[in-house]
Length: 332
Ligand code: AHG
Ligand code: MN
Ligand code: MN
Ligand code: MN
Image 1: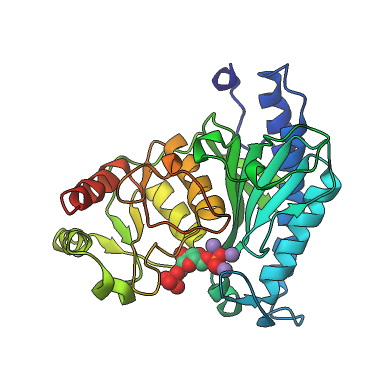
Image 2: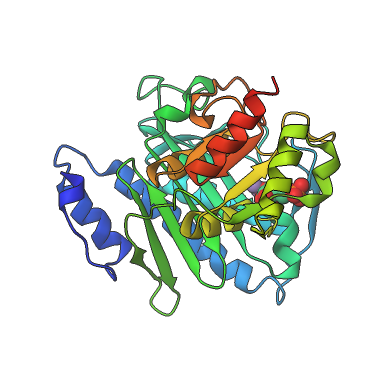
């Protein structure tokens, strides 16, 4: 089975995909091609990000997205690059992106997959040279192959995801993804233009000593959240908040910890988006042995109704997320 094939660290992403593919001879390789297409887009975006200060692609694009956010130039560039790579790759029939009001029909009528995408996460950090990321989630389409895709193809339960992952454009650029058989991390070597396997079977520690949330929202939080945070401080845990969800998530997954984005006055349903931020990270964290809830239920059990719906998010070490969720349950 998948787990039996031990793949040595240092293997390229391509060779990793091929080796893992051997475990599924019936697989026809479309999902593998899709992952390669995402990796290609991330290499191009990585290069743009590294030059943002040098060529005029930092700053505002001058338009707003459906979220009511000022789009950054790199938001739009990343969106275009992913859509083009997935369109040209041929495997994806539809895309829902944070930066697009409606689903994008790629014209690949025979593509079996759809993708939910946060092309650039942590946009407020682009111009100040702090780590940012991209997040993706993959489903099999539900409409018949050969027909025009529609919203039912992307409004699927988080449990239906066939793959989920992110790219972290940090001190090194990493691609981390799962197809439901463990979480694997690849580190990019720009001099070779290749991702190399660097973290196999990532598992998050059951307990952690890092808590991550925007302190500025503290006064909006319910008593249960405020007392959880006070308890973390009493235990002298570390407060770490980068303001890029992908970066905060990745650190917690490797070291143990919890990321909280509770409801606030400004975002009564939470700020983070279900389809292309919370669902993919929830799949990853469960594959890594952690937990993700909205304060009442597992994120992956939320039934999606709107393309850009938001949800509160508590995600990370199982022991920490369980404690917060139980605390909130006593409140309702
Ligand atoms: P995006 O840049 O894709 O819109 O996401 C921003 C998100 C997430 O990256 C980050 O954790 C969070 O917004 C930060 O929100 P606050 O600035 O409200 O803390
Ligand atoms: Mn945004
Ligand atoms: Mn985001
Ligand atoms: Mn974004």
